[in-house]
View (tube, rainbow, N blue to C red):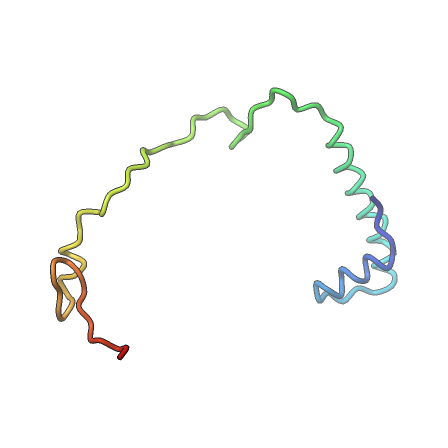
Amino acid sequence: MSVDFATVKRVARLARIAVSEEEANRMVGELNGILGFVEQLSEVDVEGVEPMTSVTPMEMKKRTDDVTDGNKAADIVSNAPVTDQNFFLVPKVVE
């Protein structure tokens, strides 16, 4: 994939960036160089390489995924004007 002058101008307009003709011509070469580097990365064999979170080996901190109600239902409804069995009671708004 390569980028041409029209694509640079279109992207600049979409990004609401003012780009002069000279800057756009320079960006064509720069963006094509970046895209060429990205294409080179696709040639690298990464079979068997584990995903990393950091350049230094470390174990990710994990917690158990326990579903609870938080045991705070009474605290949550304590400031409500009217409650019933830890539910908020509100006036009827639909006839």
